[in-house]
Length: 279
Image 1: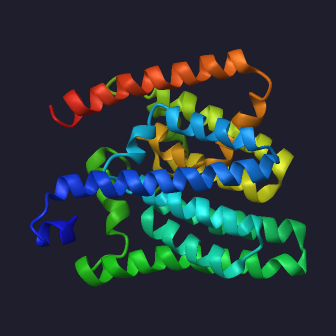
Image 2 (image 1 turned 120 degrees about the vertical axis):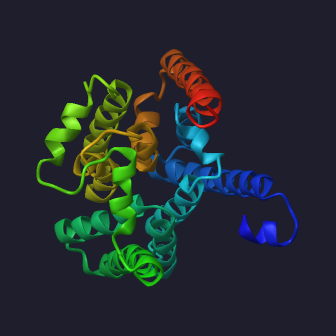
């Protein structure tokens, strides 16, 4: 956006175009990952449709970091499936630079390596861990260089009503569900659903896929609030693969789910555009 502005172009249009192009590329790669994981081409289309119809999926088209997180995480998953360590590590680096939830790749790789203990897969896991943690370290280092505090990003969350890091935060997260001032029932339902799908992914596909789906939910509990929870769980990509698998041969239920997701997305989009951000 800054480059477009420097060239005399409209930075807002640049943000929309770049986000949509990146999000489309990420969605295409994710569909391939889902099809390969479930060994079914139609499953890839189902997972793609479910992800893009989800109520907060419009953030993949907005000038947010979500589209970059989707692209790089999907590229890392594709490289993981093909056992290509260098590609997986570089993509994991991009995922962590895009969003903090990209760090889930490092945790998932570490847990998978510890449980499976297959030496020929260790280079892949190590590359993902180094890339993912390297992206976070680079981001924190940049903040340290620019503002003098590597954790300025985490502390700035207080401006949005999130508490500071504390052992009490998981309990505060639960309390935020029925907060009289700003209840988070929708976010709670999304987090609970994704958590259930994450457990299924762990059972069906292994620790790597399960942990990757569960970490964004855990991030919410560490933050002390479910604020933006239905956007953060977009990073739980294996959950959409599991949902696509669950809805296999259930066309009517799939149609109802997609319709419900899309309708809720239109309502949320209207709220964000006309009331929450624009006022």
